[in-house]
Image (cartoon, rainbow, N blue to C red; front, side):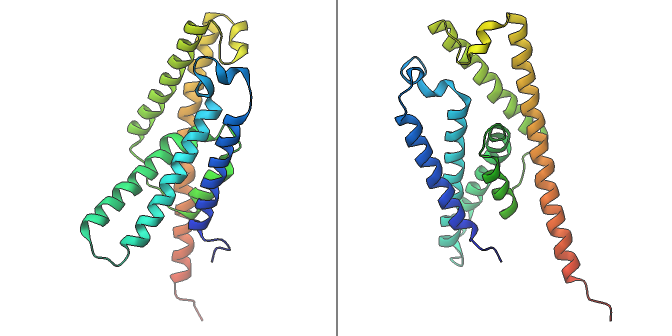
Length: 204
């Protein structure tokens, strides 16, 4: 039995992300007052993604508690939609984008405490590529408007090197998606095997 119920843990993680976001916005940085504000930076976008993800996790837990034993088919249908949304965000955004920051432990805890269904691989990879392309275009647009790159090192490399960097980043995000998919399968295949072992009758 877990020392801390997973529902309580999710609420604590959600509150911590809300606190971090409030403190992040309160920091006086020149870049926060320029075009694009904090949204230029992947770290901030990732914090928002994690807060939204754990918010949906908490909402799913509350809906599950309210639906349990009610026999209401409409509530159960809405709960299944919430669970699907939760799993989709974990697979295509929360895990791949979150790996590059210190939020990874929270994601691993979530993967360990709850089973998450992954979308089809083609759908997941397409979404990851779309997110990556969208962010790259956003960074380029900010540079077009302001004349400055969100990440200063981009100023010191040529156009060809930038293309290689952006392409490598997209490939890396695809790799992280596949890693999350494999890790999720490993965790729950191992869990299933352990449960099956416990259910086997012991030989005397």
